[in-house]
Image (cartoon, one colour):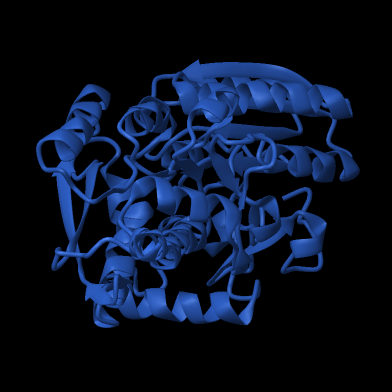
Length: 408
């Protein structure tokens, strides 16, 4: 009888923690065509988060505060290298946790790999449209970023239709990101009666898009959508200026959401340009303070490079990435365990307090599968440069400005 009473008490106690640190591993584009994302997007956010956690003593598990050590390999922006390095982190290095690699195609390849080995996998810079159907079988995947059909293009096309847009031209990169955005946009534009009169695919990191821009200009389309990665995004703006192409609205993919984009082309050239995102200092007091924190983190570099301490702020994903990492930390502490399954179940069922406020993952559509950071937690979906500020313009209930500039 005494044994029967004692055993449940023993099994209910957390396993003894013998570690003196937690190793978070990642395969990231330190070099290669995607390296800008490591410098200005999720890259700074996981480094800042680790710095903040360590400044507070670490993550508390089993009564111990465990500092974070980052083990990051350079995947050279190569997909095969990235997946090989993720397996190395799991099987050879035996890291405690994984951080995501970069871009939609890489996320698509790596999320099933992490799930195969039972590792929680937050989504970084990448959409998950093509992962949606797979998510019931990816219980360890937790997407953090908003993306094409979650919940960006639908409210954008509604706003454009309300402004009287009738025709659109599209340029998209010929990889998973570009194809996802192109197909969703094609469907959504058709739904609201906007005709796509020109659509051109370009290589993933194309820097010469003048012919495609001229085709869009000559089509007479009201608006241009450029579903491309940097540096193509920069080429779209620079070469549009060179050929005097000025559509009534220009919607840019990744790149247009970075503060330094405005610093490069100037406030006048960026006025009215739309990009995905979005958050601003006006979104909440917490995000205003977060922007100050980012300035403290790399403001000197921005000041040196552009004379702008906010130059390297990402107005699309920075708040979502950091909040996702805060959720992971709190899930580890609430689980009071390093068991990935236990932590996963906490992530899937609990609410967390982050820089976004009350934060949680929407699991309802996926049952026991993976989840996405709830749309209700997003600070915004679409931003527009207005008087030098990247304002939230969609959805209407999260706007940080009184109007959408149309036409430019």
